[in-house]
Amino acid sequence: MKIEKYTKLIGNELLPNIQLSTEGPFDPIIVKNFSNTWQTIGSGNYAGVFLHQSNPKWVVKVYGREPEELKKEVEVYKKLGNHQSFSSLIDSGDNYLILKRIDGINLFDAVVKGVPIPESVVNDVDEGMAYARAKGLNPFDVHGKNVVMSNGRGYIVDVSDFYKQGKCRKWDDLKRAYYKIYLPIIYKYRLRVPFFIVNSVRKGYRFYRKIKKGNK
Ligand SMILES: Nc1ncnc2c1ncn2[C@@H]1O[C@H](COP(=O)(O)OP(=O)(O)O)[C@@H](O)[C@H]1O
Ligand SMILES: [Mg+2]
Image: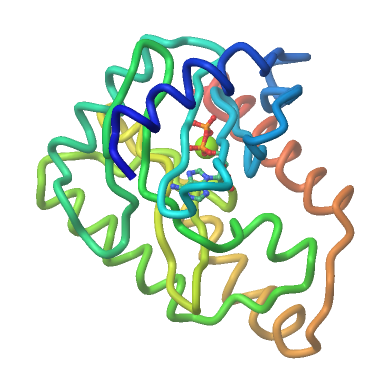
């Protein structure tokens, strides 16, 4: 699809029909979508992500808070270029990015829905992170909702914090849980873990890391 046509669909049918709001600092963005043609396919801490039925290859990430983060994400994508473990940036507007769609499910939802996550997904993410480091970036905030699995492959879809300094332990901690708990139990017995448990672990983890940081 031509970018001009797609941008018009964003301006005319998407942006006027969505509302992005927040409840608390630990909670993701809440998305209200009144559009008939745009579907909400994800939400994170900053943004809602939308798919238009006429173009399954792209998605639009609309920033609901801290829109200055958007510019940073654009810069990160420019530095990354194209690599198989990432989405790629098609174009950007004042408060949105157009990204290549990864047609799959994020790891958080996969655990809740009982979609098995093979080890290849973990290895792809490791490879992507090594590549980002080689490009002078700092792979930050890589966690279950920022990795999408598609046909057994893993893709890091959220690179907005890759310019940050310091060490982010999320992926290391998640990997430890993957080998200690996920593979030998959840994967082996094909279990589904209820949303409230996965979400409590996520919130508890964020809280725990915050406390630790505060005490340092
Ligand atoms: N390129 C993409 N293709 C498919 N789904 C995506 C893509 N980017 C994001 N998503 C989905 O949208 C969710 C939120 O996107 P994300 O970039 O993490 O937003 P935030 O910066 O607010 O955390 C992700 O968890 C994922 O499920
Ligand atoms: Mg995210």
